[in-house]
Amino acid sequence: MAMIEVRGLTKAFGELAVLKGVDLTLERGSVLVIIGPSGSGKSTLLRCLNVLETPCSGTIAIGEANMAFTSGVKVKQADMLALRRQSGMVFQAYHLFPHLTALQNVMEGQVTTLRRSKEEAKERALTLLAKVGLGGKADAYPHQLSGGQQQRVGIARAMSIDPQLLLFDEPTSALDPELVREVLKVIRELAKEGRTMMIVTHEMKFAREVADRIILIDEGVIVEEGRPEQLFGSPKQERTKQFLSKIMEVY
Image 1: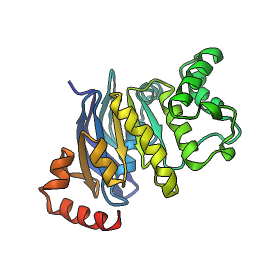
Image 2: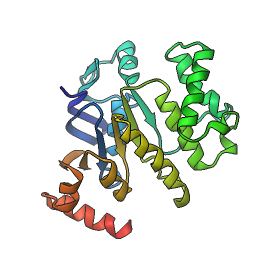
Image 3: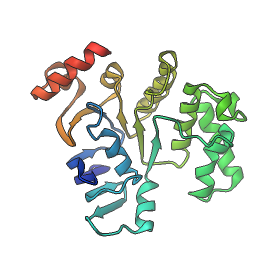
Image 4: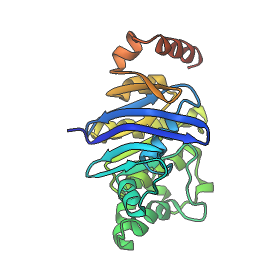
C-alpha cells in the first residue's frame, strides 16, 4: 500500500488554476523528483501536501493521516495539523528564525509541535546538526552561516519532527554554485538511508541519480512519469522531450 496517495488535487488562486486534478502515489522509502518549467505548479503541489496552501478539492493521505478537500468547505484546524505533522518542508529560502541559533531553530518545532521537553529537543537537535555536518555550528545565528549551512540547518529542522515524508522545494535554487554540492550531498545520504522524499529541483544530474521516479508537471497536470532512465533516455511525451532539450542546454 502506498504511504502517500493524492487523488484529484486541485488548487486555484482566484481565476488562475494552478493544479488541475493531480493524482500520484509514493511508496515508503522512495524518492520522487518533480521537474517542470517555472509556474507549472511544482511548488504549489508541495505546499498543498504540507497544507501551507489549502487545496480547492481532492484528497491527500500521508501515513495514517488523510484529508478530503471540498471547494467552499472550511477545513478543520485539527485535521490540518494532523496532516501537516506527517511531513517536513525544506524551503528555497531557508526560512530560519534570525533571532534563534541553529540549535534553537532545530529545537523550536519539537517543543511547540511535538511538546518535547527542552532537554529531549536539544539532544535530538544536536544529533541532527551533526548528521548534516554542522555539529560545530549549534550556537551560530543564521547571519553567521553561509547559505549552504543555513539550508542544512533547514534540513535538520525538517527532520526534527520525525516526519513520514520530507519535502524539498528547490533546495539549492538560492545557493551559489559552490554551495550546492554540500546540500545535495546531505540529500543523497538521506536517500541512501531510505527516507521517503519528494524533491522539486532543476538539478537534472542530481534528479537522475537520486530519484526512484520522476514526474514532469506542466500547466498543473502530470505530463509524464517514469523511472529516471526511461524519462531521460526515452521520454514518451513530446512536451517532455521539449522540456528536457531546453533545460539540458542550460544545465
